[in-house]
Amino acid sequence: MEETDRSIVAALSADGRMSYTDLAEKVGLSVSAVHQRVRRLEQRGVITGYAAKVNFEEIGLPLTALVAIRPFDPAQPDDAPEKLAHLPQIDSCYSVAGEDFYLLLVRVASPSDLEKLLQEIRTSANVTTRTTVVLSTPYEQRPPSVS
Image (cartoon, rainbow, N blue to C red; front, side, top):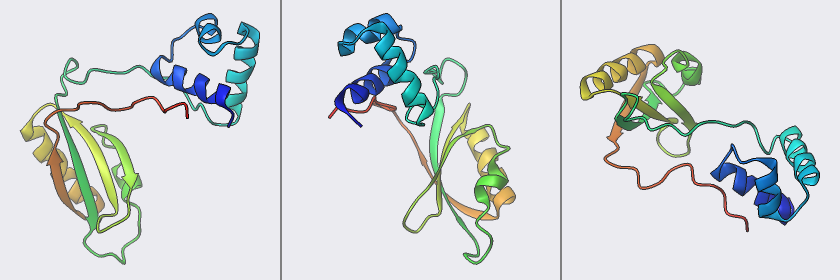
């Protein structure tokens, strides 16, 4: 990907609501050229969507945890993501290398809600869990660097 496209991606990652006029000024192109490039980046699947950044504490979900899961029996089907998809408390599911099979990012209102969710994860997917509670988040979802 060329430098101008990287700059566009970085700018939109930082502010997905940036106008084409502001974006054009930032990357040094005309508004129509920026619009065409953004459309091509979307068509190529580089830009897959736009979203609001949410303060989870303000919406009543102050507790974030990372839950590593692995099946009781490694020979069982690898279908945990499908079996857990119905749980809205799971923000993200990552397939990972190492001892664990998946790492889940979960957001809940309280420790007791986390305990209930862990039980539901274990039961739904027939897995063991190892949980790390997040104390603070110095940064997340940082825009990609231009270089």
